[in-house]
Length: 263
Ligand code: PEP
Ligand code: MN
Image (cartoon, rainbow, N blue to C red; front, top):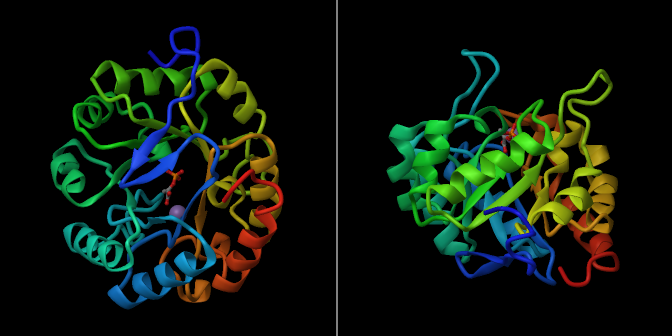
């Protein structure tokens, strides 16, 4: 179902009225996590003013340590919905557990399946059974074939609104958090009709690498970008080191305009 041999034309996924795929570069931006209503609102306002058309933030956070901040759950979803509605930004947020799929689908315009859950087949089946668009992140050490087969699970369960997200993979190189695989963008777009988004925030783990890799991803043909931005990265409860300052995000959006057909 994901194969370009079966469908030659590009799939365009509609997320709350915003197209992902097609001529315009879709920019999904926001903090790693919902922390407080003020933090989300202020950050969302800044990314919207700079030109982002979709808001991201996690209410359920997969953390390497069981002692890390794991998100506000249902209260985080409520804050997200309120801020999204207030600013007119569709929401992309992660769902980690099959038990939460219905609740997250109620609040979110697009369900994110995180890297760590790319091969959680029960979750893929459950999200595949919803009518919500899905952003499927590439697994930490997943091959492209495994990633496409995970997308196939979603489609086989009845959900054709699938967006792929390259977010870096684990390699032998420890200098950066992950190795952003930009080869994957043109390669995957040759294999599948599904739109491909790049997340240079998790792909690099370092905010100063995010603007150049955003430009590179766009030049490589990505249909969109997912970028972490925080109103005050120094106090972020997760992923502060890779979160852009609002002013940096604004400068990046300006730099993207000459590279993308339309932003
Ligand atoms: C995220 O988007 O905040 C996230 C946890 O991403 P990933 O699953 O790619 O690590
Ligand atoms: Mn994050």
